[in-house]
Image (cartoon, rainbow, N blue to C red; front, side, top):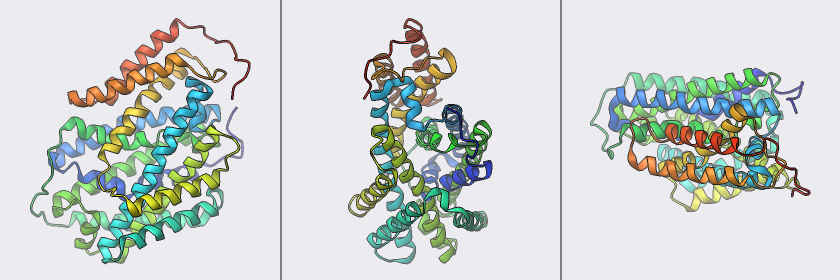
Length: 398
């Protein structure tokens, strides 16, 4: 199946991914790089995003060329039931991100204005649900206005940081270059199970994917650098305190609210799309709203401040998954969507998952994502070369 002739334009795709990258969570992650200093921190940010965005581009190409959502493309390599496993994992990931984004946004807003954090959680959850109710296709001028405002506000924040004076260094735990690299790769990698939800209906899938990934990568690096510069300039890893010291006030609050809503909307929306891979009877909008409600509840009642382990977990789950997809789609041309399970590929994914976790402990200079993926791709190519090119179609697939 090919993308619809009346699909989304290049402009619309670029706008979506601009909003995805511009978030408090990305700025917050950038502050974790401060122990490396600016030069090494910047190198880790740029190199990690080059690697992560290359993977994101490959995933978007698969969805764009096949016309399938992100989780439907997973079924090409893992079978119908195997694909549902990753759809479920993706929904869990998106539920986690929804809670984290609302928590981070509410914490920043309450710190900036000294008001109740739980009330900000509820307000942000409500705004996200309004975005969902309006629907992605109907946001139109509201989305353009929001992104334009965010761009101007973020330029103001960047200008304020560039004029700041260095303060006492931030007290933070040591961070190796390898783990910093993984933190940089993990953010674009976290969008990997979502990108095809948007590129599959693009008028020009390859160009739309290239523009989406390029804009996301550039803006995401910008957010990371803001966080890094804030930590080094103000001795703070609290973005709200940085905005306060930079004298942004209401402008800072608008950045927090708008960036949280536009980014978290994509998480909740894609959770609804992923639910279709579990059962076509599920309503996408209802699932998106449910994810937002549960995420809001998590933000109210759970401490979600440090999400570095969550980022590493995302990398360990989805890096070997996409490695197998790349091997099947780009190298050996094998599809298993007509089967319930591709047991060899699922077993290879488990090996890749364990390998990723072990390589994290090894603290290699190049990180764990690249070596784990390359080994998984090599194993997948070798194992699948011994299997029939077209496996027998099963009598019934549920």
